[in-house]
Length: 392
Ligand code: KG4
Ligand code: ZN
Image (cartoon, rainbow, N blue to C red):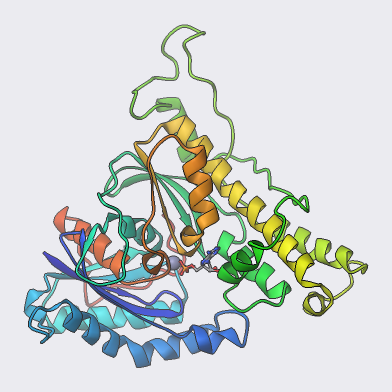
């Protein structure tokens, strides 16, 4: 069973063919990143225009790469999956309209899938004939704790099974990758800042500066419901069973994140380092900071931002005792994050090749495979609409 996945939610035009939800047969990504770099962020209109130009050649290439006879035949494709949301409206529209047209003309079932869910499904790809990929050796086992950390998303999800999950928490403002990108911009580093910040952080002292970790309150209703039902998924321990001494400890914390505070704290710290007050413009900071100051700021920021998501992941692990933890999204390629999770969690932590952490069509095709295999509702190719604010 082979699914073609199409992804156009942001600045990457991507397509891929995945077999049986585990075998990566092709993965083609055309990014308009270079066009956005000069503006220091993604410009929606430029992204949409680039998708129009790239989408058909990218799909053609993905089909050809997957076909054994190099003809790129549609006969081998059983279904099409496309990112329906979340993402930029103009970008999503190009992918969805292309997928709808192909589903009608090639007579294939169509699935509109969630981009954020897709990031987690990149971890289900365990085999490939393509060179240069290091994939997990086996598929994740449920129940799974999923951490999505990207330029647009920061979410913590408890997955009991395919298509059966609870959103434990998410960012209330900026995504973690967005915070990395903004700190990168402030330090005058190339866009996207995530990789640039992590590179210079290697030469800095991560304990040089104290930066704040946001303390979140309000707990999501779904989490409260889970808390009253069960605290231990694998042990099946009921909160109100047993004597007082046997009772699991009461959990009260929130799993939501916030990264706007640390971003402002980095700005104030940089102003302080050059002896200026809060009125000094952020655009003038990079020229006045020396290389060591930049490296120390980058390292201190990276440590606290990563600790913020790791702390919550460890708390969620302790509360729900999943069989394993999986991470997805661009920031999942951070070695500091991978290492911190592996050190602090007693369970397997799965992540995939960095090429499958950032936006790609393979994660959409993998999720599409499970949608098709497990009888999820098909989309109507005459009416499937985009969902820019789709939540998990
Ligand atoms: O998943 P992705 O391609 O896009 C969204 O769906 O948002 O993630 C891109 C994000 C960017 O913010 C980039 O700066 C960040 O991932 N990123 C990193 C690293 N590599 C990419 N952040 C921190 N450390 C890295 N090594
Ligand atoms: Zn993404």
